[in-house]
Length: 491
Ligand code: NAD
Image 1 (cartoon, rainbow, N blue to C red):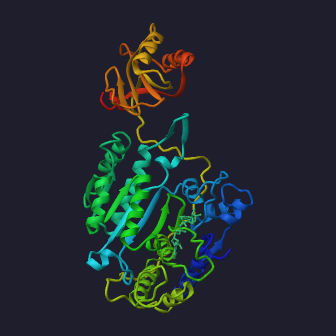
Image 2: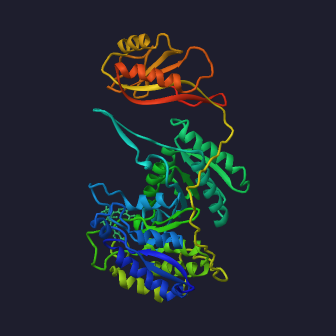
Image 3: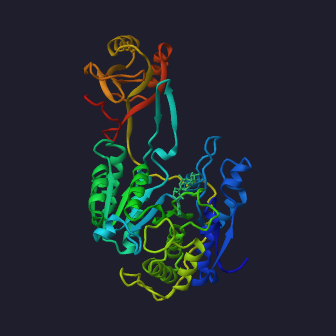
């Protein structure tokens, strides 16, 4: 094997091979290929077509694990048939927990903000693994469905720490936490608490937090207020695309998925089947993602030179057909050729990148762990069971349901304390205007505080299950004396 740094390369589907070729042409001209060797791996539609539902071959997995870096073009997700999104699978399988995207106004790319003279230049750091992206969903009754939104303290710590570290490395002096902790007090509340807790280690970085809906409005009104925003997975997904819209669309929004060992650099747009194979695609997103990759492996000088050349090229009016710019558009190949020829030039209407003195390759390939790493934050927390929530499929009225459940729990250490429906209390008090569905949550709590194991709650569950169809069962607990469960609305 050569002594160059090895990177796994998956050109992808649709326009993927064209834009990958374009980026390789620019890398060749900039001297990247003298230091780095790209090894092509098989991934995407051709692999799905062979019945491999992961969408990647064992050889591809081995190559990614061997190098620790994957540079990839867009890949199609099969619709139906059990194949999951390969992009999500890759991030989760290889522990690439942080999605980093940079949104900046580019010269020659007209947007409402560029026309108004409002500069856009900020990063979004999105948690990549947890939240609803676990894809853990169940149909609980014929009418009700649930998706599990899992947020963990180690997951929050990883992503918040990553945001602060990246801000420090990039010289960014303000980080904003976006959340919905006013409604989801435990999940988003934890995300916000850990953001505040970790911020203490970064006294030079200004912090603020903002509720996600207000953040979206502020981003549209005053995008120049933000420098870096850290978010949970689903909220981060939505905000990232909103932010892409501020700078001209997904074609200009690079994306990196960074893990402790393995990182993935990719274009965020799709395979664009409508223009595939026609030399029309814009390679800018994949190129900008490649520049984050070059900086990640220490080629900061080369990355800055290519970025300046790209800015100069766009500024001089050379653009592909998807860009609202002046003059006739050029094809993918001609655009890449222009960027390659403009190496060494810098833009004049926007500030270009400062080119550091030299490159210093600094990537170490991962060492394969022998077991999965267990991440634990709270090791000494005392937890005690105080009851249980049982979800039931029933069409009984809350009053009738309560009467039957009270009979069932006679002689047990529990009493029925509340019945809620879609999160709103409907017994012991409630409003007849609250519409209900046939999936009720009934909460039993200990008559007297005592230390019980989970056995009595399971015994109670068995008694309830003799009479009702159970859809979910969750023991409720106190953690160091703090309630580990939410109250119903109206409770
Ligand atoms: P898309 O991003 O492929 O296309 C949307 C529109 O944007 C199309 O009109 C397309 O021509 C245009 N477009 C996209 N990228 C462009 C580029 N670089 N240059 C010029 N124009 C560009 O979205 P879609 O049509 O919803 O999805 C097509 C396929 O891509 C689906 O199979 C989807 O699952 C997949 N996809 C993959 C990724 C990824 O790999 N990261 C992301 C999104 C969608």
